Image 1: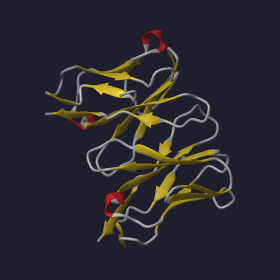
Image 2: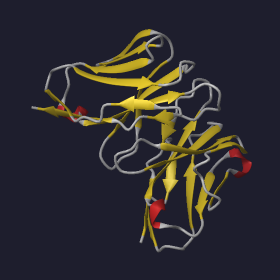
Image 3: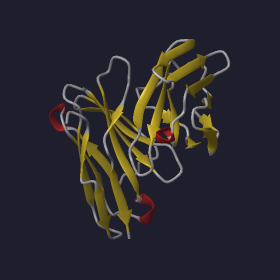
Length: 113
Length: 112
């Protein structure tokens, strides 16, 4: 399978705990995006990487959220001190850059108890 | 506020009919438009992209773009029960990087 992969697929955690998600983009896609989706809504942009550089970050992203893309390959999204409002599907997408077509991974569903 | 608007539905059509899904966007300078299909509990799947005014056809799907009216639509011909899903309209707005702004989606139900 050469699509975008995400790990884990599901995560249940208690409020206040830290969680980290991983995304592996399609090979040779230099652009990587994180989105968050809640029930009944479309995906909401969180952050964008071009290679290893984080070029844009949503103002909605509190300082509890941090993302990295070392070496311009896989990316991690960490949420510190989770809150119940963080419960959502976290989606990663990658793009080759020419036309901005973004391809999504299967997502990580986070439940904060 | 950059917005993408879709009718939430559900849009119910009989099998074999044409389903018409509509989307409006707020930024006149937008250049890239996408339609994604999302089955319940799954992630969005890209089905169409369109960049210039007019129609773009791919199999049973036709995307239509009218930049003057800030309107993009998706037609699904010969609708099948397997087309039942939520269809998300996404727009790359001008003036930023490459993030997509999504509408909330239209739920399509194709009944036999």
